Image 1 (cartoon, rainbow, N blue to C red):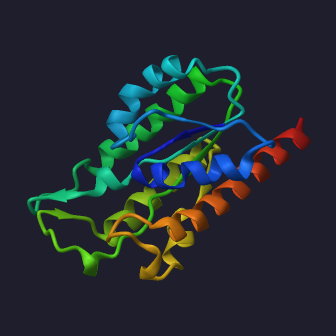
Image 2 (image 1 turned 120 degrees about the vertical axis):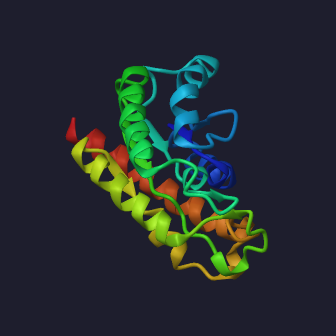
Length: 194
């Protein structure tokens, strides 16, 4: 299993590895995947660095929080059309690099807008919801599974957050346990379909 994603992935990655120990080997990219265009550029380098490809059974991937950020009152960092274009290209790149892998896209998690005290960097749940909705349409078209992390995290209280964007240890454990179960279920479903 290959995990690709931003700082949210960095938070849950160790939990997923622990929960899947003895059931699946889990590898993570060596850095934050940042925004979709960065992932598109770097995914081939990461696969080469990790020496992986045809041996990957499942890629669990997200982009979004860096894409929706509004800096200095501007529009989202990655305009929606560009985000969608990058997602499509990332799908093709994953299929090229890991041709035997199931792909799971994890949509973007919500933020606690009211706790943001640095208005130079703003994220809005309305933007996240719009980007998630459009991404879901792309994933449906390409028959890619979507793990709805927005709904999973939206049910958590602010006590599960380290700040207005990132989860704390309790929140990451909750999310990591959910993701490990999702991945295990997807792997079993694929094995029974063969």
